[in-house]
Length: 381
Image (cartoon, rainbow, N blue to C red; front, side):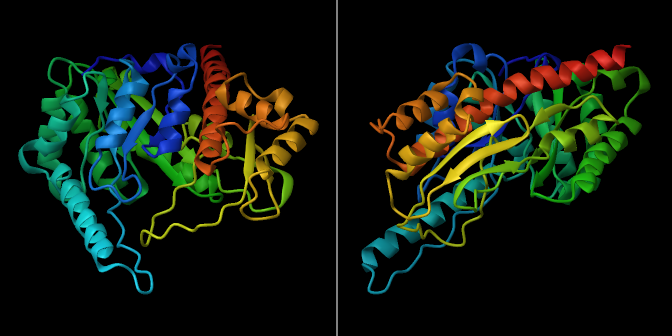
């Protein structure tokens, strides 16, 4: 496990390990990869019973670069039962669901300081572990043991705090900091969640969380505390044609930043939905998205299942000037080619999700460099 100076990075995107998000990161320019620390959140892919495929892809995509390794706590959904469905398929899907959920339960078991999770993290020499828990109010001692064992040798680690466990973790984090050689070893992620409302309340959550943590930390060490304010304003385009969808993620960060010098994080322009079952609609609607400084310029095709919609959308965004302002990257190249009529290898929905995420990550790396350093300069005046 690596030692990372978190203060040298400004952007920490949380990416689940679906095909599109891993591909989007893999296609980042090498120079861009060195300017961010992604949080890869192991999550179920399709109806898989394990993490074998995404783990292999993350290993390949990171190629020795440091990243944070986290775990989605969402269980595998129940198999969708079609009318007159093959009983053997139902049995296979049910077995895969059971196997995946058993694996998740094992990785989240607090036994011996979350030993199963620590073992998995140890198989990634370049992974910074995110501490795991389910009920921190009753697992505090095992979380502390987990932190002590993972930080052995002054290694870096992280903890992710969402509103549902903020009280317990705000009290526990100062104890974790007290067992580290330096508070700078721990990255605190204040995860304000995914929604397009309640900006001030969510910013206040981040501010209150770090304030409570600092109150339990020695004054001499408070300047060494590192934290990220994370939120996600992205949602799927819901209007036909070309429209601009604003984002308030940076506005939320700016409000929280009045209390503490947070770095910036988001969900990489992916909208997360918890699945009720394994049903996947057969229809798709072609959508093309290009990031703005604080929002997205997007095209949504009026008809379902129209693959040429990606060409039409790319043309319209190009003609609207959105493409000219897009950062140079793999995602931009994809849109540029599509605007000329070339959809070779890109006429699949997940490729266009990857294009959006790749463009977004590239844009946010630059914005974070500008925004965070500007606030740091203002603080020094």
